Length: 121
Image (cartoon, rainbow, N blue to C red; front, side, top):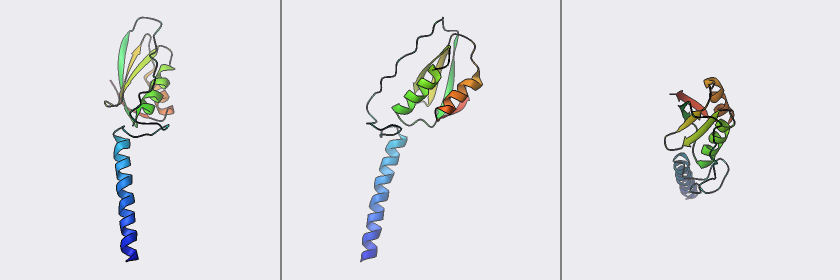
């Protein structure tokens, strides 16, 4: 009888953990800094000093919520001449630039923020 109770408790805990994990990976749960997954964060748009010369799209892995979006946006926006718009559902950052940018530097700042650039277009 005790064995059955223990098994039922373990199953209940696994179900709760699975539900939380699914919400986390869909970007709906609280992660990476807490708070509600449905709360939009204030992510200021960076204005470039000169006219935009072009855009680069970085495919980024490891983002799960708006906190992740903010972290990636802020990391890229610290690069002189770069301004990012990050899309969680597409797992990408569109980087506008007003001067030549070093692709490896962009990858490095994203990596330093805790994410990985999968591809650059």
